[in-house]
Length: 123
Length: 133
Image (cartoon, rainbow over all chains, first blue to last red; front, top):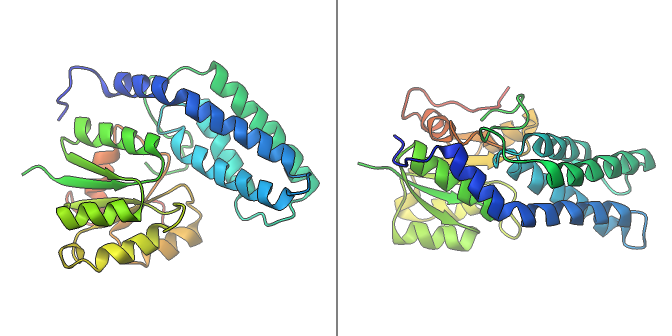
C-alpha cells in the first residue's frame, strides 16, 4: 500500500537533503576522534570512534547512501570489539577510511533506492 | 485494522526513514520514541501492535528498555523486534534469546522493512530471526 503519489526513494532523498549536514558533521567528528586517539585522552577518543562508526553504519545505508554506508559498515566492523589501546596499524587504517567516508559524503547524492549498503546484512 | 508500530531509536534519521517506510509502504501507523522513557510513556498511553527497538542506545539500552516495556501489563505479549548494526552471530544469538520476536539488521531496506517486520513477527508466516546462524 503506497498512499503517496511520490515514490519512497524520492521521499527518502528529500529526507537525506535535510539530514545530510548532521550526518556529515558526525563523520567529521569521527575523523577528529581518530586523530585524537594518539592524544592524552586517547581512550575516550577511541570509544567515541567506535560509537560514531556504529551510529553511521546504522543510518547511512538506510538513507540511501550506498558508498558512504558501505564505508561506515566497514569502519564499524573494524572498530567493534577492538579494546583500548588499538594497534597503530588499526588506527591508521581507520583514519584512512574515515577520511574516505567524509569524502564520500561530500560527493554522494541519494541513491535510486534506499537499500542496505552491505548485501551480507539482512534487511 | 491498521497496525500501530512503536519505533524506538536514539537516531532521529533512523526514526524518520523507518516512519516513511512503514507508513508509505506498509500502510501502518507509526509512533516514535527516542529513548526508554519515551517508549514506556508511549506504550503506557496506548499499547502498539509491534515494537521496533534499537539495541545500542545511550543510557538505557535495548534489552533494558525491553524489560521495562515487558513490565507493563499491556505489553507482555506485544511482539518486539530488535534493530541492530551489530550482526555478529554471537550477538544475534544473545539478542534472540531474549523475549523478542526476532532481530533485524541496520541499515535496513526501506522498501522491504514492513515486509521484514511482518515476517519476523509471524504475521506473514512462521517467525524468523534474520541474520541468525
